[in-house]
Length: 124
Image 1 (cartoon, rainbow, N blue to C red):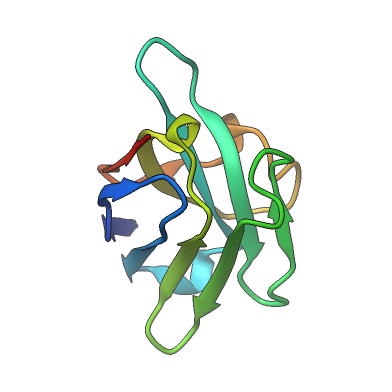
Image 2: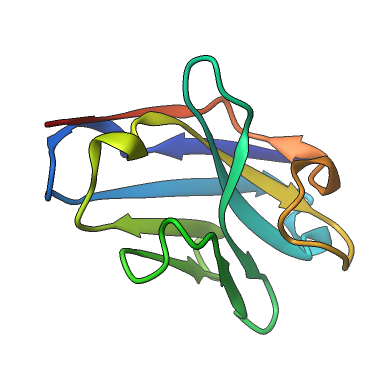
């Protein structure tokens, strides 16, 4: 079993930056990919970014492409989401998730394991 713990959320002004981290523990050798999703109040959970654990291939939602960068540190079993040029519409709870097989990176239903979430608030 894998456990995920996110950190790094907070309050930032528009145009600012934050870096989220997601530390994995447990049976981490089974991880195929990890992703970041977000959920704003009254909205559905949406895909933000994902990275394949072995090859490091990256995937982004159009809304964050060019502003956010996902990376992973295999030795630390940690995935990062560097968020630059933040906008008020980026305000949400950000969740880290892990999956154990190939398939669509974009659907939250493909990720069985989730962290507790971290709040990101961008003020205008």
